[in-house]
Each structure stands twice: as C-alpha cells, then as structure tokens.
Length: 292
Image 1: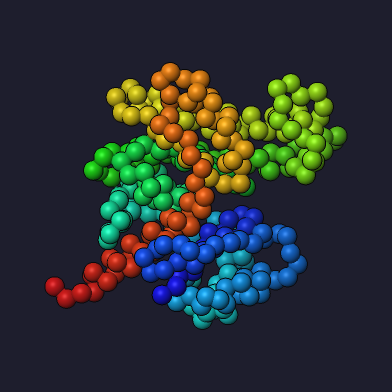
Image 2: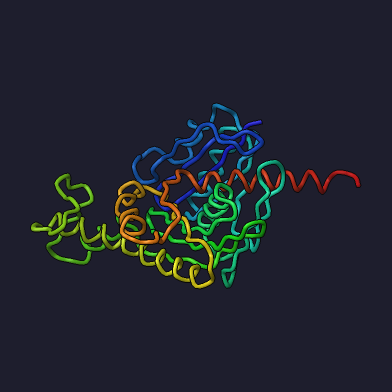
C-alpha cells in the first residue's frame, strides 16, 4: 500500500510516498510561487504514479492552497487528504514506534502542525534525549524538548522569528537604498563587511545563528542545573547546512564541556513525523476495531 505524505508550508509543498509502515521511499517538492501553471494541475501530474491509497498531511498554508492540494489528490488518486494537527499528546505504537511526546503549549492545538510533527520525528530518532529542533524556512522556529529515558518526552516551548529570506525582504521593503541581496552572487558572510551586500548577508546570518545559539545555551544551562545531559541540536530547513559549522564551533568546539551532545542536519523531519503519526493512528484504529 502506498501513502502520500504532505508537508505544506508557506512557500512550498513537499511530499513523499511511503509504505504502510511509514517508511518513506520517494520524495520531492514544488515552490508555490514559482510557476504560473495552476497548483492543483501541477500536483496532480506529479502524484499519478505511484497511485496512493491514502494521503496524510500537515499544513500552515492558506485555505486556497489546501483546497488545491485536496483537488490534486482527488484527481491523481481519487482519495481525500487527512490533515493532521498538533495534539496534546502523541503516543506511537507498533514495532519501532514506542515513543511518547507531551505538548506543554498553553493551548496545544495552537502549535503549528509542522513544528509538532518535526518534533515527533526527532524524538523517534533520538529517544530519551533532550533536543533543540531548529528549522530555518520562511520562519525560523526553535523547539526545546526535554527527554527522559523510558518516559515521555516533553515539548517545553519554542520560539518563532522571521527566516533569513524574510529578513532580507524586510530590509529591501523598509529602506530606500538597501537592495534585496538574496540573489546577489557576491554577498558573503565575512568577519568585517566592507560593502553593503556583505553587510546584509553577514548581518542576517549572524541574526539566525545567534538566535539558535542563544536558545540552545539557555536550554543547556537549564538542563545542567537539573543534572541532566546536554541537549542535541538538530538543524532542518533550507539554511541548515550553512549554519552547521558555525553552531558546531560555538556550542561544541569552543566550550568545555560542550553545551550540546551533537549538532546534526535532519532532512524532511516534518514528512517523517507525518509518517510516524499516520502509522500510529492506523495501528490504533486497527487495534480498537479488533474484537476483545
């Protein structure tokens, strides 16, 4: 059985096909604003093969985009999309999915679905560990998860800030003479910028890296006060690789003892979390339907 898994963001739709155990095996994506062809038509053409039997997704996009995606799923495979939102608590069941995550948000359902499913995937890969999950997309989000061996992990809270592209755009819109340098080839991160392009690129980079570093340091200090192990920092999203070396240096190489257990790049965390959630709910539904 093939499942279609969806991660619908503000600027792109990512998807993957999966087997019924939630194992991804094909994935790709489409930019929402980069083509004049209707979104529903583009997606339907992309999803015809393999033909999915079920579709599961999470979304932070507007209603019009979600309607186009639902139309594409009906056209390509004759299936509806089951949209997954944040929960107060996740419990995975079945082989390889024995994990639990508690959502300590004041209003759990208000948490972005993409953030929640990224954390589910992160906890599945690093069970029992405390984690900082930093995702750099349209927005940059940083989540702190307190791990506990043989017990449920707890999402204690997180932050949201403009992503790098939004920072660049805001400078271009809000000033008279500063350019939008996102697409300027010569703009580089340097120690002492001596031109405007480098100044903007370097400033935005340090704003992003510094925010992640600050949140991670504060969480690491909090864990240390409780005699808990240092957290692991997971980087996701389009800027992850650019941030990796700097954050490793600041949080591991220049600290004794290191403030983090490791810094790793994790691709497609949201899709992996959707797969885990879908699998867990299918197992739960089957178990509840069996006679006792």
